[in-house]
Length: 103
Image 1 (tube, one colour):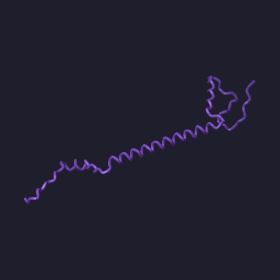
Image 2 (image 1 turned 180 degrees about the vertical axis):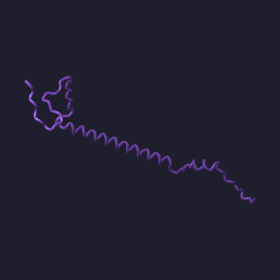
Image 3 (image 1 turned 180 degrees about the horizontal axis):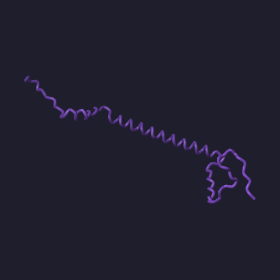
Image 4 (image 1 turned 45 degrees about the vertical axis):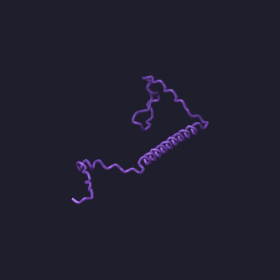
C-alpha cells in the first residue's frame, strides 16, 4: 500500500510524522533545579547582592585609606622639580654667591 501524501502546511519541505532514527542520540539528562518554591531564590539573590555591596564598600574604604595615606605623606613637602625640563635644558647652572663686596 502506498503512503498517502500529507497535506501542504506552507513549509518548503514536508513535515514527517516520524523523526529520523538513523542515529540514536541518548536523551540529555534533565538539569537539576537548585531552586525550589520555598523562597530560596530570593535568599540567594539577596545574599549575592549583599556580598557585592560589601565588596564595593571594602574597595571604597581601601581607596579612601590609600588617598589619605598619600596625602599624609606629601603634606608640607615641596614638589619635585620636573626632570623633563632639566634634561631638555642641559646641565643645571649654579647660583653665584656674592659676599657683599663689589667686583
